[in-house]
Length: 170
Image 1 (cartoon, rainbow, N blue to C red):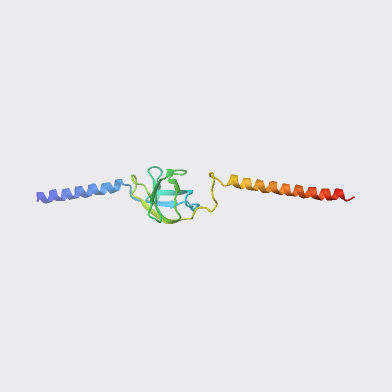
Image 2: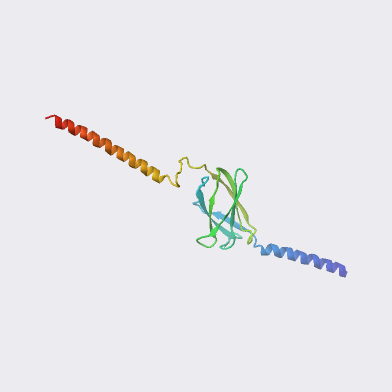
């Protein structure tokens, strides 16, 4: 009888310890993307905002929040999010190197048992405009200035021709 009581006590203790570990893990959380989330372009940094709510109610405003992204070729990237704005709101800057469909999830490895898989990201191809020196604006301004100067030169030359013809005719 005593052996059965000891065995039952040991099993109950083990069950209690296992359930305490799950309780200390913090349970589950929901992740909701900001409505104005930008469409990512390959090779460009995209900022994504989202809200993390523990048990769907309590904002999670501190901890280690990681956004994992898996590319169409299987490449896995991890980006650390930062708390920003109201409690529970997080922001991550991601640069995804390739176009295609990316699977992604939000995890909080030390705080919550959360690995929320979000709707796949459709990453568009890089812009077809060649970027030289980090920006195309100086190139566009140079071309525009050249066109304006050429137009002024042509108009001035044309005006001189008209003026010289008018002077020759009395």
